[in-house]
Length: 260
Ligand SMILES: C[S@@+](CC[C@H](N)C(=O)[O-])C[C@H]1O[C@@H](n2cnc3c(N)ncnc32)[C@H](O)[C@@H]1O
Image 1 (cartoon, rainbow, N blue to C red):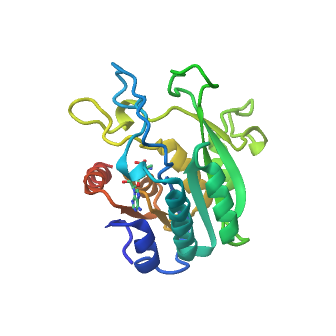
Image 2: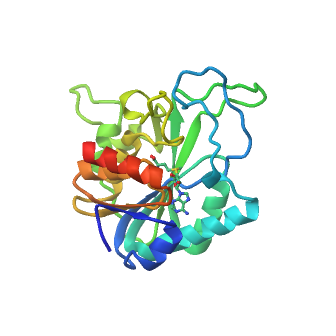
Image 3: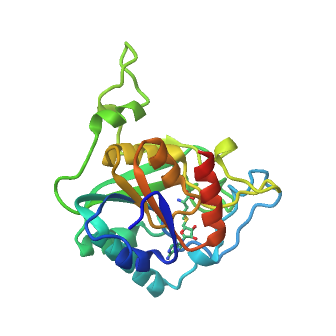
């Protein structure tokens, strides 16, 4: 098994056949949410695609296939996690029910559902529901002795003591406010459009990697996309493994990792 390396191919196959059993302390997975298929684009938006509804071949399943796919990758991830390993899964209201149910069935324990409040969420175009402004990150563990670096993540608490020190976590809940990726962090093509529809904020990965891994640990991302997990892992002195099916995204992540 190679580290600081992106495997090309299907993550289920690679986690079953190329990654050592019980070897990975931390997995961050940002899987397809099965949102695609219904086009609802905002004409004339200037955000480089941030407000375009995700509509990708890799995100389109019929419901039973989605359940099977989720079960298969969650099972393969369980195989490669160390006995005290952590799995963080990015979700929305569209797939959180399925992910929670299947993961519990496979033997994972749920530690937290972290709510990410997107301060610049997509506008409420239809005006038929409350505005969708949150995503979730489910933190699962395989055994009992998981890593949780409480002191390292106190810095994420926006509230400080009178002397400016980091406060206890009482003020820092399973809740984080972050914009969706924009500005310099967003990877764009020459036409100004985002090069990947679901690039995740580096700050979110910082929180997860600092909380649930130690230096030199391996962090695996089975849905690597633009390589956000690799970039942050590298910066925080962790090893990383990416898995991605799409060669364009792999090339993009290689450039990004080299530049970082
Ligand atoms: C939601 S995106 C991840 C985006 C990533 N978190 C980022 O910050 O760029 C999911 C990615 O998984 C890839 N993918 C989908 N199914 C896959 C599979 N079975 N094996 C490996 N990669 C897959 C897609 O090509 C897509 O780039």
